[in-house]
Length: 102
Image (tube, rainbow, N blue to C red; front, side, top):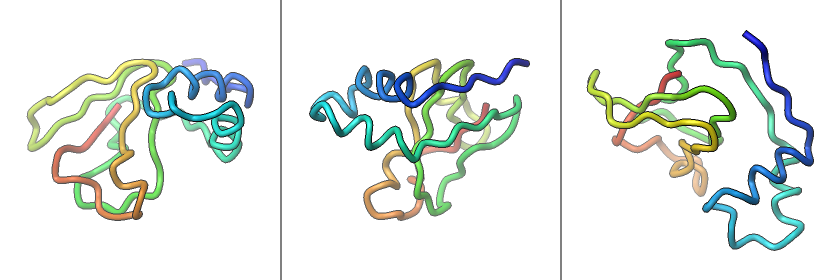
């Protein structure tokens, strides 16, 4: 498996294309992209769980992630999909909605 590493300008452009950041001015996506860390997640690894505290958001760069609850698949998230953002504003618990795995 090849691990993808995006340069800051590539991360910035990816953020600009996402609905969540579409209202941002020219400078904000670059500021958001600066602290981004990239991780390769192996198939089957659980990335988030409901009721865990979260201080990050996840963006699928390549491949896919599956959102599920109690073993039932709720959604498949592909390249450019974002999840985990609901815990960002206050660092609170992940919603009771789902957990995600790659």
